[in-house]
Amino acid sequence: MTDIISTPPGDAARRERGGSADEHGALEDERACFELMELLFFAYRDFISDPDQILESFGFGRAHHRVLHFVMRNPGIRVAELLDILKITKQSLGRVLRQLIKDGYIYQREGASDRRQRLLYVTETGKALTLRLARPQIQRIREALRQSGCGSEGQMRSLLTGLVNAGERERVRRWIGNR
Image 1 (cartoon, helix red, strand yellow):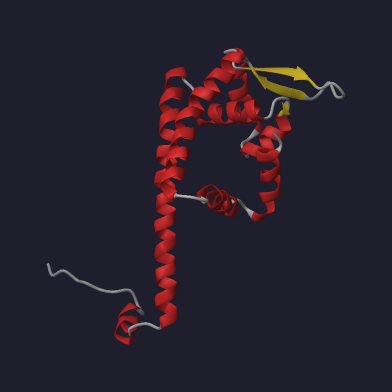
Image 2 (cartoon, one colour):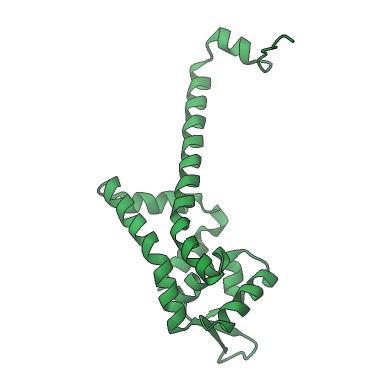
C-alpha cells in the first residue's frame, strides 16, 4: 500500500505565498503562547509534586491541601467563603472537611452573630501539616524568583493575576491580601 501524504486545505497555498507578515507574527505569538502554556503545565506539575507525596502518606488529596491552606490563611473562614474560593461542590467540600475534622486537622465553631454559620480553623496539627506542605513550594518559588532576577516578583504577581478570570480578580486580590 502506498503512503499518502497530504496537507490540510489552505496550508499548501499559504506556504507557496510565504504567508503575510501578519500571519507570521500571529503564528509566532501563538507558538509562544503554546510554549508558555506548556511551561505552566510543567511548572504546576512539579510545584504540586512534593505536597502530593506528603499528602499520599496521610491518605489525603489536593482538595485536602487546598482546604488546609485557605483555612490556615483565613482563620474563621465560613464554609460558604471556602466554597467560593475552591469552586468545588458542597458535597466534595463536606467530604474533605469531615475527614479533616475527624482526623484533628481542622475544627469548627458557630458564628457569634449567626449560629448557623460554621467558622473553620486549623488545629496545631493542621497548621504543622499545612506548613510542611508549603515549605517545598515556598522553596521552589524563592529559587525561581532568584533565578529570574530583580523585580521578578512583581512581574510574576502581575502575570498570575492576569491569568485569573477578569471578573474574579478583585475578589482574589482581597482573599490573598486580607491578612
